[in-house]
Length: 170
Image 1: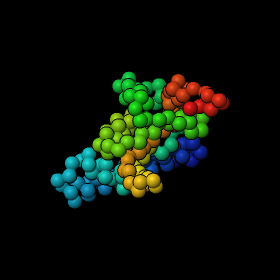
Image 2: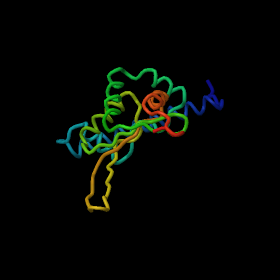
Image 3: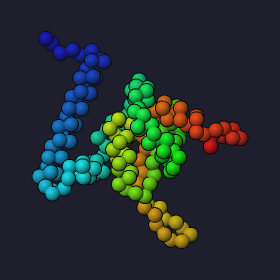
Image 4: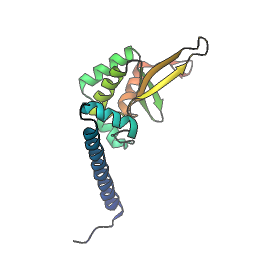
């Protein structure tokens, strides 16, 4: 059968081919890292790989993907999100939808949250190191930060948690 060159189908085939190619590259790099550093655990290698080479997850979600993910966030993750909102988490509007930001000093805690969110596909890049110099006292604080995708789920939470005061949400 001759290959199809329909616009949608060829783009879809190219997308699958690029996805497979990327997965093979990721697998080969992880195998090489495992051989180079045999005493390092697999999660540490994966995190190191993501920190250096970028996220393993997608960088863009289509609106129908966002809607599907928003409807299927497990109750356990919803409880974690609520807990973070009661603590140091924040939600911001970004375009038509909102996203959640996590900004913490404890690297292991941030990695744990990122891994939980990554399992359901709601995060972008791996946590990044953030340094801040306090000009008043000269101290530098170190923290780790990551953001989720913009999702209708977070927009709903934003509208529940943040009220309009003097014409502004806050």
